[in-house]
Image (tube, rainbow, N blue to C red; front, side, top):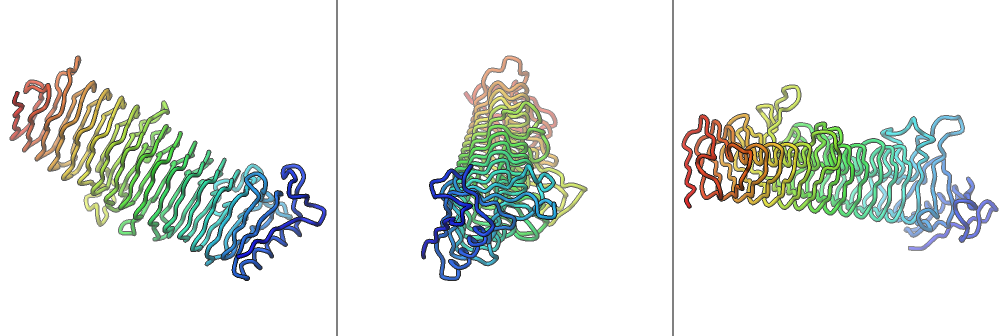
Length: 497
């Protein structure tokens, strides 16, 4: 593997130490020579093509080929910029850097890419006017680059695998900061800063045309002011289609996402862990929750939501901090939730649109089972701290949570049709404006060893309506007269001393 250094000698360049902004501008011949160097390097087995500090204004994309490392002289020193208009006056919708389809082992590092978005406004959010396209590549590294003013996605990964995007900055993207389409596999997106997308998401691993992604790590990124989701994996997967699998979203910071901070949509076998979300769901629409986990038209399973901090900073909308629906086996544990304008966590069997029925959801509802909500703090949320709205849901657990200062109930269970097997145990419940625990249409449930504190204006600490087969025992500061019952059958109250 050799190294090719591109040095300008035709009088339009300058010395390597020149100030890129004011002195060095590559000619068309220089750019043509660069493309030839890339092709020759690839043909000879690969190597590094190193660019001196200079500005390249390109009309057509630079085409990368197998085993080539395109290396600049540093961010804001080597700049590759797209000329906004073609010779006939039409807006230039080309990429800036793209890969030869079927390439292997491609690297881009130490440079800046400028999409000239403001001079191509008609192409903002265009589905094709991306800045960097990695297409059908096996083995890639994007490291220490900066991308500004892309018209569409700043980086697009298409049917590519075994790659890394790291240590890079994306600013003012016209569409997604990083977009992955179709079968993206074994890809890591780490330690990047994405600041403001004019449309769509900060990072988007999308489902497209029957293809899902797997083995994805999204870690240690900061995403600020995304126009839609901060980080989204999934999108809408049709009935019976392949799930996204083995997705890890960890240690990211999401600030002021217009809709969800982090969304899993038809993801199975995944984790959302140790993220900080500050501001989400500005407009309060569906999918605007801090953390949004849904099965969509397919039941998803085995997703963990662990140790995240979800703090609402917007003063508009009615988004929940955490939303779960259409899931089987989801663990929500160790999270801190404050100041949601909806529920702290809302677990829902929601109705599918247009009365649709699917293979999984034969009654037209996104059901859920085996949801565990443990060791979380739900504080000062405008509605309920914890709200389960089920439909014959089974095997759910609410355990060891701190639920305090919420605007409605501390914990509310409200089934569309009676569910079974619910355990509410060891929670600390105080200062909620309505009841501490409210249960409606639930069978075979237990309220055990919860701590109820004195409530100055609360008539009842527990409300039971249309329930059966329930056991209430060993709860601190809960007397039988603190329990409201209506159409309740086989309720065993054994508080003891």
